[in-house]
Length: 128
Image 1 (cartoon, helix red, strand yellow):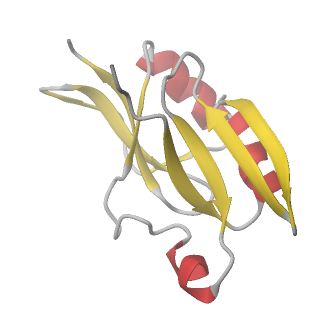
Image 2 (cartoon, rainbow, N blue to C red):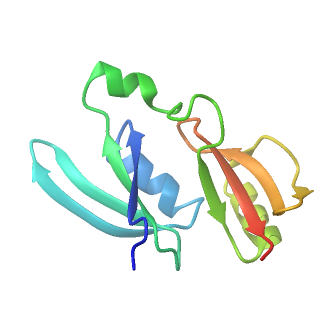
Protein backbone atom coordinates (compact mmCIF):
# COMPACT_ATOMS: atom_id res chain seq x y z
CA UNK A 1 0.00 0.00 0.00
CA UNK A 2 1.29 3.49 -0.80
CA UNK A 3 0.67 6.91 0.68
CA UNK A 4 2.01 10.39 0.10
CA UNK A 5 4.79 10.68 2.69
CA UNK A 6 6.09 14.25 2.33
CA UNK A 7 5.30 17.48 0.56
CA UNK A 8 8.07 20.08 0.21
CA UNK A 9 7.33 23.63 1.33
CA UNK A 10 9.79 26.38 0.41
CA UNK A 11 10.73 28.49 3.43
CA UNK A 12 12.98 31.47 4.06
CA UNK A 13 14.46 30.17 7.31
CA UNK A 14 14.30 26.75 8.97
CA UNK A 15 13.89 27.97 12.54
CA UNK A 16 11.16 30.53 11.86
CA UNK A 17 9.23 27.90 9.88
CA UNK A 18 9.64 25.32 12.67
CA UNK A 19 8.39 27.89 15.20
CA UNK A 20 5.29 28.65 13.12
CA UNK A 21 4.32 25.09 12.30
CA UNK A 22 4.99 23.69 15.79
CA UNK A 23 3.53 26.75 17.53
CA UNK A 24 0.33 28.23 16.07
CA UNK A 25 -0.46 25.19 13.89
CA UNK A 26 0.43 22.61 16.54
CA UNK A 27 2.50 20.37 14.25
CA UNK A 28 5.16 18.03 15.64
CA UNK A 29 8.82 18.32 14.70
CA UNK A 30 9.64 14.83 13.42
CA UNK A 31 13.17 15.38 12.09
CA UNK A 32 15.77 18.13 12.08
CA UNK A 33 19.01 16.69 10.73
CA UNK A 34 22.02 18.72 9.57
CA UNK A 35 23.22 17.87 6.07
CA UNK A 36 26.25 20.15 5.87
CA UNK A 37 26.74 23.60 4.35
CA UNK A 38 23.79 24.97 6.36
CA UNK A 39 21.31 22.57 4.76
CA UNK A 40 18.96 20.61 7.02
CA UNK A 41 16.39 17.82 6.62
CA UNK A 42 13.43 19.28 8.53
CA UNK A 43 10.10 17.46 8.68
CA UNK A 44 6.99 18.55 10.58
CA UNK A 45 3.73 16.61 10.81
CA UNK A 46 0.24 17.47 11.95
CA UNK A 47 -0.52 15.34 15.03
CA UNK A 48 -1.71 11.92 13.91
CA UNK A 49 -1.16 12.72 10.23
CA UNK A 50 0.42 10.45 7.63
CA UNK A 51 1.81 13.15 5.36
CA UNK A 52 4.48 15.51 6.60
CA UNK A 53 5.93 18.76 5.36
CA UNK A 54 9.56 18.88 4.35
CA UNK A 55 10.59 22.45 5.18
CA UNK A 56 13.00 23.26 2.36
CA UNK A 57 15.02 26.46 2.66
CA UNK A 58 15.15 28.34 -0.62
CA UNK A 59 18.71 28.46 -1.93
CA UNK A 60 18.53 30.58 -5.08
CA UNK A 61 16.58 33.54 -6.48
CA UNK A 62 14.16 31.30 -8.41
CA UNK A 63 13.18 29.41 -5.27
CA UNK A 64 13.11 32.58 -3.14
CA UNK A 65 10.62 34.13 -5.61
CA UNK A 66 8.22 31.26 -4.96
CA UNK A 67 8.20 31.44 -1.17
CA UNK A 68 4.61 32.18 -0.14
CA UNK A 69 3.13 31.65 -3.58
CA UNK A 70 3.86 28.04 -4.43
CA UNK A 71 0.39 27.51 -5.88
CA UNK A 72 -0.19 30.67 -7.87
CA UNK A 73 -2.41 32.29 -5.26
CA UNK A 74 -4.84 29.40 -4.84
CA UNK A 75 -5.23 27.20 -1.79
CA UNK A 76 -2.54 24.56 -2.02
CA UNK A 77 -2.59 22.89 1.40
CA UNK A 78 -5.49 21.31 3.29
CA UNK A 79 -5.33 20.78 7.05
CA UNK A 80 -8.15 18.37 7.95
CA UNK A 81 -9.01 18.35 11.67
CA UNK A 82 -11.49 16.39 13.77
CA UNK A 83 -12.74 19.39 15.78
CA UNK A 84 -12.96 22.41 13.51
CA UNK A 85 -14.22 24.86 16.15
CA UNK A 86 -11.45 24.00 18.62
CA UNK A 87 -8.70 24.14 15.98
CA UNK A 88 -10.01 27.42 14.56
CA UNK A 89 -10.20 29.00 18.04
CA UNK A 90 -6.71 27.79 19.01
CA UNK A 91 -5.14 28.97 15.76
CA UNK A 92 -6.92 32.34 15.88
CA UNK A 93 -5.75 32.96 19.45
CA UNK A 94 -2.20 32.02 18.35
CA UNK A 95 -2.29 34.77 15.70
CA UNK A 96 -3.03 32.78 12.55
CA UNK A 97 -4.64 35.06 9.93
CA UNK A 98 -7.91 33.71 8.52
CA UNK A 99 -9.16 35.33 5.33
CA UNK A 100 -12.78 34.53 6.06
CA UNK A 101 -15.26 33.30 8.60
CA UNK A 102 -15.84 29.53 8.67
CA UNK A 103 -18.32 28.37 6.04
CA UNK A 104 -20.20 25.17 5.42
CA UNK A 105 -19.74 23.46 2.06
CA UNK A 106 -21.02 20.13 0.73
CA UNK A 107 -17.68 18.53 1.65
CA UNK A 108 -17.51 19.99 5.19
CA UNK A 109 -16.68 23.09 7.24
CA UNK A 110 -13.82 25.23 5.95
CA UNK A 111 -11.97 28.53 6.38
CA UNK A 112 -8.95 29.78 4.43
CA UNK A 113 -5.86 30.93 6.32
CA UNK A 114 -2.33 31.92 5.37
CA UNK A 115 0.91 30.56 6.75
CA UNK A 116 3.76 32.85 7.82
CA UNK A 117 4.89 33.22 4.20
CA UNK A 118 1.47 33.84 2.67
CA UNK A 119 0.67 30.40 1.26
CA UNK A 120 -3.06 29.77 1.36
CA UNK A 121 -4.41 26.78 3.33
CA UNK A 122 -7.84 25.36 4.03
CA UNK A 123 -8.58 24.46 7.63
CA UNK A 124 -11.38 21.95 7.25
CA UNK A 125 -13.39 19.16 8.73
CA UNK A 126 -14.62 16.88 5.99
CA UNK A 127 -17.80 14.92 6.02
CA UNK A 128 -17.36 11.30 5.35
